[in-house]
Image 1: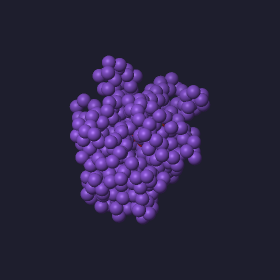
Image 2 (image 1 turned 90 degrees about the vertical axis):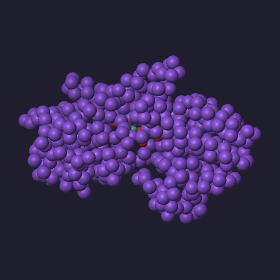
Image 3 (image 1 turned 45 degrees about the vertical axis):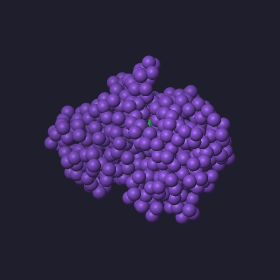
Image 4 (image 1 turned 135 degrees about the vertical axis):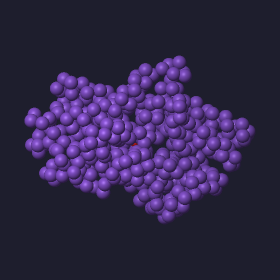
Length: 440
Ligand code: UGA
């Protein structure tokens, strides 16, 4: 089988590389000539564990090709995947579909024999139908079907999510299109992966519902973390205590500084807009968006309290800048709110992130970027862990204490134990747990 993948961004690259690993001939198209050049020399423009190796082996075996030429990519393709960006439109939170519709026009211009046109980008309900209309208008009589095949890849674990998914969702009203997609995913039959076949609209909505539900779950546990702090309860035990109930499940119950990334913030907002316009507002999701926005700012109070009530003229070492570990993605990262707020309160910031520094430099000003965690902590008054990279999980606490001016550690991901921090003599503030204050 042969497919064309439009868009060599995160989704297009991971999906393209993984389909080629399944044995499909994949041609990835992007307008960015530099990116295509880089990719053809097997240099991956984003950090995603395992992706560069996968690209290299499939480029070498000639199953994966990168080009700027859509007509070449679409020649003899059984399916064309649209995997271009759908950023939040400035001002109203709606998903910006201009790239999707532009891609649809270009697909129409290059359409020859029967092809299944698949939206892989996260698109609001109704987009698939609009893509169909664009193509029919532009090329009446063309032989094609439309399908929606949303992705559920987590950054940092995208390859295993693609290779061993919980499920595959295929939305189309046409059996021929469903058969082409089922054939593409055939290698997953061995793992008995469930395939949910449904309508175009339902498939589009499943993606938003899944992300909104997960964002809600994270926000639920974050609110309970604050409640635990007020009631002297412990969020770790609470999460375990509820998570062991099979109907609740233990995943996505890690309290933290608020969710970020390229998906949850954008998708919850877009869903809320769609639902309002449909006359069926999703009040829960709207509230989740508000709570999560406030949460990031609330983290600044915690740091301030740990520092004795003010961070003015204090140097704060920040460990972890990306929205989660194993990515270089800074989009909507809590650090982008927390650091400027700390600066506004008069703090000086030294920071380190294992992969995110290049990106972070584009968004953060007046930060001293360091080469490692210990360099960041040297001479600082306090250290704040924003992202739970493995590199921060086993810091040499004796060394940390000797480097800091005051032994203050604010752990926004609960990666340390209260007892070990108590033993090590830290003033330790974490999330939803007892605070270790001076002399406590
Ligand atoms: C998310 C979904 O998990 C994927 O299934 C989906 O395909 C993807 O969005 C997308 O729409 O493309 P991702 O944004 O990579 O994936 O990251 P997650 O691992 O889901 O984490 C999202 C945010 O929630 C992060 O800021 C993370 O730190 C936070 N989080 C997650 C918590 O604070 N606590 C948790 O228990 C879990």
